[in-house]
Image (spheres, rainbow, N blue to C red):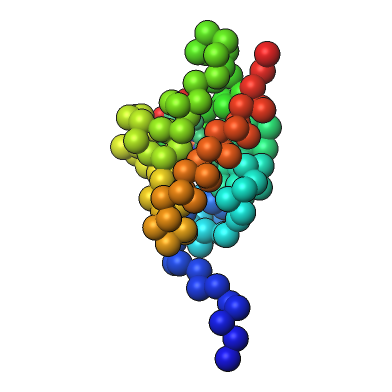
Length: 146
Ligand code: HEC
């Protein structure tokens, strides 16, 4: 029997936007919980596209397909450096991704707490969790408006 097949942890995360049709016939958008997909910890852009773009948009401007189903708007990630006076706040961004940085949205769970998800994905390897977060932080830095 092959052991090559990875057992994917059953993790659910808000990742897909779907259209549902209410009885009135008017389309309403809903966020669907789907199992988390495995990605390479080495690729910030692959992780961003897979996990973040649905809300924050591929370009980071906050207009992903799920954006209008959120209670709190998904932050425009291209403005983080500008808002911080020109210096990209990498430590704060890392904290937010991990889920340590206190944000009001964490109460409403609109912005998922990625630290826990990445922790389960890596089978508890903290070094891999850190690599994932570091590469995401670097990818978001490339999206900054000057
Ligand atoms: C389900 C939608 C959703 C997904 C998926 C999502 N976010 Fe967010 N994110 C939000 C919302 C909503 C906020 C705004 C929170 C607030 O303003 O209180 C936010 C805020 C943030 C912030 C804070 C910006 C600031 O103001 O300092 C960062 C950084 C961020 N997200 C990064 C990410 C990264 C990286 C991913 C992917 C690993 C991701 N987000 C995935 C919804 C999402």
